[in-house]
Image (cartoon, rainbow, N blue to C red):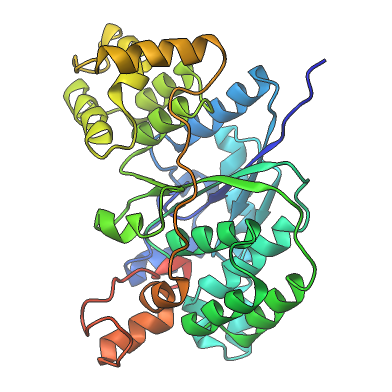
Length: 359
């Protein structure tokens, strides 16, 4: 019997799985009173997660699914009810205890996510089985691109304990998180790898802001594009791509435009996703699009025939300058830039990146 390979998918909740409106005070105040029926999944997210589960079972690569949220545990029951309504199988969910920060007067900690999520990710990493591959899903509304890439390089031992603390200091995280990370990194983490970081553009940010984190990070504008990339990586089957396209519900012309954009952004080559393209066009779900070059199509067919992905996920790039990036992506960096402080980012130009579940 073939040995089962374990994969973990770690998913952000707000704006990555759930449609959340934290950009307005009204939207924020409404959250604690929402029932499961009030909550709406991001189009395509449910179908994608179910497709990943199904593909994993068929390929004898069972997956675990964990959610990491910056929302408070007081809304946990509504979130769990919503996941049950959606038929989502998951193995764990973590919430941020905002009430504790509030009663202790840690008002900056209410808005700061880098320290909190880094700590929780490393706590999670200590329980990961060696040899596991983990995939991280988030959005560009908070600091997920920074946090996930930073965490991936800690796991890969490219960022050691000393540099990790320097980065957290540059981000201005609360000392409780810095101390916790220092203690967690006192012993080596299990040896596993981060297979990819997947970021849904919700703002959207300029591509160069996300490309700063290297080839490990894949950004996309809808879950159809993400499904195409996961198909190319061998993590999602053709049926999963079709299900995601159906769940998103774009007209055939707009789905074709999304397909073309994924190719134009070099997210996935159209010649390497021939089967989903053919299935969608044949079903009338997508207008006809170019097939891609004959060489790419032939190479993809050959790789599929031997069970290899047609377009493996990108390898590791040069180590990002996390200390400099922390000044751009952190809550403190945004505040300093707004005041015109000398942080390396001109006043008024710092990206508004960390609104998050508590702002």
